[in-house]
Amino acid sequence: MLQTRWLTFGVAWLILLAGYYRLLAVPNRTPAQRVTVFTSLGYLMVVAWLVFAPVGLILPDSYKALSYFYMVPYNLHPFVHVDPEFLANILLTGPLGVYCYLWRPHWSWWQVALAGLVPGLVIESAQFASD
Image 1 (cartoon, rainbow, N blue to C red):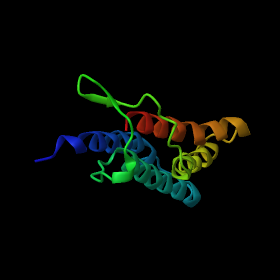
Image 2 (spheres, rainbow, N blue to C red):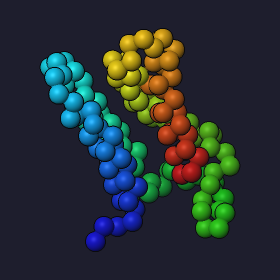
Image 3 (cartoon, rainbow, N blue to C red):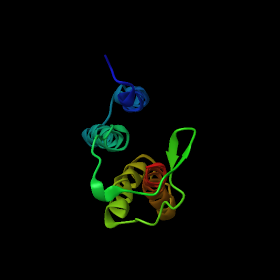
Image 4 (cartoon, rainbow, N blue to C red):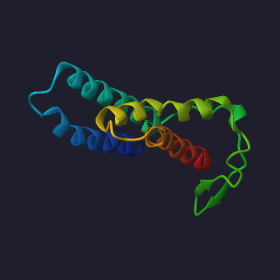
């Protein structure tokens, strides 16, 4: 039986694969376009794995002062423990900007930078604030 903690991860992969179904089915692609489509799918699957797969580690030094709202923990001081890993995980979504530029070459450099960095910032901030 599938545990409910894997449900978010499974739904994320299903949405990702459903979105790529149309991209993968387009005929007459050049080899470079095929490489771009397949590597971007692999990249996004890895990012989805890192973001949505449940983690079972509870490290003793990762204690944060949490408050609870109807049994749901939240952190009132989310950026007290910012470390280099937090910033590295934001940069992990940087290649997304490159893929966006390959799909939309008319975008300016700042649109590409936003497409690459904003998703990582949102994901990390949400995880950090809720963890």
